[in-house]
Each structure stands twice: as C-alpha cells, then as structure tokens.
Length: 400
Image (tube, rainbow, N blue to C red; front, side):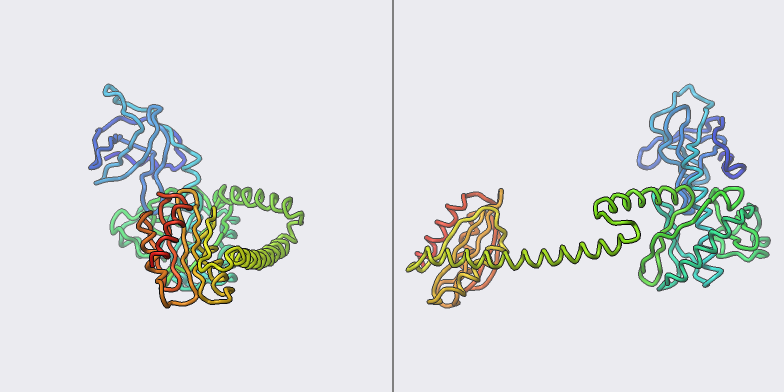
C-alpha cells in the first residue's frame, strides 16, 4: 500500500512517486494513493504533514485500511502517473521537535515522580499531556522541566528499532505498546524507551528547549501545557512584546510590573466603588426631583433613553421608599435602541397589582417579565414608542 519514506528517513524533503489509485472517501472527498510517500498521516497524537504534490496543496493525509490517502486542494490531471512531491519542512520539523520533546518531558515526570502520561495532543500553538495525578506542585514541574532540558543539552542519540512483541519485552518500556507486531521503538538510551509511530530527529539536541507553560486539574488527572523547539522562541517573542507594551503603558520597569498592575487594579476597584456610590446619589436626587415634580399626584411616571432595567429598578425603589404617603405608584419606561424596558412599582401590595399591569403592557411588545403585586418589570421589542408605552401604563392604572 505504499512505502513509508518518513520511517526510512524523516529528513526527506522531496520525493518522486507513482500513482497507485485515486478514490473518494465516504464524505465524497477525493484522494490519491502513491506507491511511496514521505507524507506522515495523522496518528499517535501527531498531525499530518502538509506540502504539495505536482504543485497542488496537500490538505490532509490519513492512513485508512493500510493505504495512505493524500487529499489534494484540486484534482490531478487524469494523464498523470508520476508525481513530484515536496514536504512542508518547517511543519514537519516542528512536529519532530514537539513530539520528541513530549517523549522527553513525559519520561522526566515518569522517572522522577512515577507520573504516567495517559493523554497527548500536539496542537498548532501548544502541546498538552495528561498526567495520571490529581495534583502537581510548582517544584515538581520545575524539576521535571530541568531534567528534560538536561537530556536535550546532552544531545543523546535517538535510536529507532522495529521489534517483535517478544523482543520488546526485553526493554524497560515506559508504557505497554498497543500493537503486538511490527513494534516501532523510539529509544533515548538510559532515559526513555517508548513504542511510537511518529517522526523524530536524530538526537535530543535538535529539540532545542522544552518549556512548561501551565497546568490545570482535569477530573482526576493533570493537564500540562508546554512548548518545544522553535515554539519556545515564538512564545518568548510574544510574551516579550506584551511585556514591553505594558512597561510603556504603565511607565514601570519589568521587575516592578506585577506591583504596578496590582496598584492599578486596586485603583480601578476603588474608582468603580466611588462611581457606584456617586451613581446611587444621582439616582436619589433624580428620585426626589421626580417626586417633587409630581407633588399631589398619585403616580410618578417618566420616559428615559438607554437606561438599563437595573437602573429603572433602583430608581423605582428609591421613589416608593422616599414617598411620604406610602401610596405613590411609580411607572418608568426606557427605550434602548430596538427594545423597551419598563418597571411598575408601589409601596404596598394592596390594591392595584403591578404584576398584572406590567403583564398587560408587555403583550403590546412581545415582551417577557415578572415580579410581584408590588413590584414588576420586563422588556420587549420597541413596537411602540416609549411615550406610547407610558401612556398605556397610565391608562391601565386609571382603569384599575
């Protein structure tokens, strides 16, 4: 079903092959199978290789029923029998660095703390491994990272062997292999022995560096985020840009950044509290103004623009609490773009039901709401103007 050149030499960047067959998968996607290929198919946590075949972009590579299918951006000419293919080497080498770095870091956690790796994902930006432990300390993470980078620094040769199940039993495998024949071992001598079908460099030094970014509890496991190789440099560049931008915005050196941010957050919290208190005072004066302008009337009513229902509720409560006779009815309406909000309130639950009044009015605007006989609110579509809604509420109150 085609020679796997990526196993013969993971450093192959281009190759020539003959077309064995063309076909469609169950979703109707066209693919081509070659007599040999250097394109790695998705598997074992490692994504597929990209590149071109006859200058046509390879969109996906999968191994299905023993054949490696290459999905192309457009069809090959029917007369084509031999093709020239080029691997996206930057993507391939990135995957080699990340996958090998994962082996090293997983082995470090295993060797130091007996934390087994039970899950692995190689993403476009970061990698994750799931460790079989409910908790992970900062000290443990630092020790594992240091050991992993020491193995990288020592530039240990990486050996790949094909063995039988019986032969595999002679090696101290980090985990049991899923396959029982044609087992492929990836060996970092005296450190890690692991069954794996991925692509790896010749020596650990090509991984360059391993950096743990973060971790979190996932059910009874710990999910660890990290990067290797060139991704470490990219992460450093990204974080350095953010840090440099913050130093200018906060006018603070890098060493004082954390303290500056804490001071800023405390100031923001204090300012928000002051604004909230000021807003409460403004609502109080607004309520007194509405009561004064409605002196002698049993209903206080007003139309607003762009006031939230929460503001209307606060204002209505202040009005009914400030009323000296405890018998005032408060009707407030606000138009917010294409919606209307309304609040109906009074001090006592006796007499007219505010819930009934609001429910009746809300039918005009396909609205929803709720509340009690003394205090109700709701909102809906602005099918009528705010003035028309207030007039309707006044008529409903008068009718009661």
